[in-house]
Length: 184
Image (tube, rainbow, N blue to C red; front, side, top):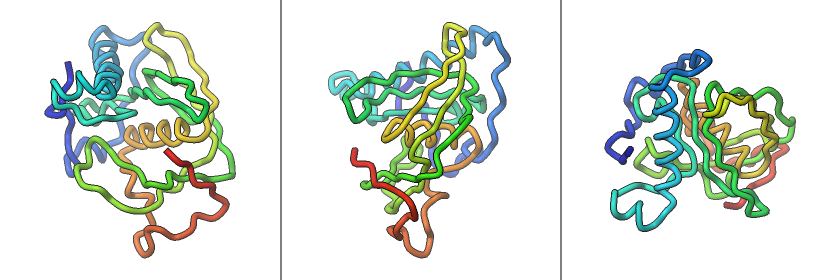
């Protein structure tokens, strides 16, 4: 079981590398890594398990965050209608996105970043993501709101991009053109 000690922190070189594609079909080792990512995110949202194992709550995790430079992400989040989106994907890709932007009104955080970094993180309001699940099925997801933001955050990790790279350095709370704030 993954713990906070398995998560690399900001400044670790793996977080700035472009992760490798996972060869299909995935190896047992790659499947085990992806299973451990989704397990961490689910466990971190269970207050009892999180407290017992000292897990910081998260809604997404990417393989580079546990020092595995491969294109794998796990997301466990509810949308604005309280539908649960729980996905563990190999080689996720954004295949289309809206012109309209959005951002989390409260700002973003990251399990690899211990301090709070204030500011708006501009994202696409809607994205379509394609990837392969643990059973080897191709998955295509149309996302908006918080789930769209979380998938973009995790896919950024696969490209060596941190959320704060998107924040306006001169004015962290500058209005984002054509963007709607998303409340958590």
